[in-house]
Amino acid sequence: MEALLAKDTLFTLFVLSVIGFVGSLIAIPFILVRLPPNYFDERHPRPWMENHHPLLRLVGRVLKNLVGAVFLAAGFAMLFLPGQGILTMLIGLSLIDFPGKRRLERKFIGQASVLRTINSMREKFGRPPLTVAGDP
Image (tube, rainbow, N blue to C red):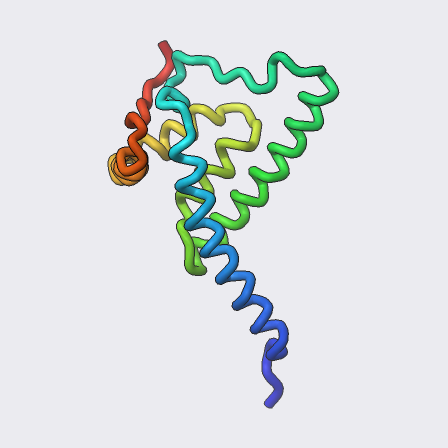
């Protein structure tokens, strides 16, 4: 009986899975440790590239959303493959612009186990804990 997937395809999927796993182990702490402590605090605005040319802001916003979509898709895949799926999806959501984004981020981050994990990671790097607060 023929295999459903060729050996080359399975090997490629395996390599991509390993790369995604290792990449998430490096990228997620790198990003989470560098966030400002009040990033998820609704009382503080998050201006992005406000002092740059409008065309540069547009290009930057498009690229940021594309990278966010890749992280979101990779995080979803990591729910079934090796990797830090929830944290990767959180990074992706934080990069994508959509209505209600901050509320959804706070819901994810506000979960005690997620916030505890992130803050213990930040503590190891000498960074203050993240604060999560709703609308003023």
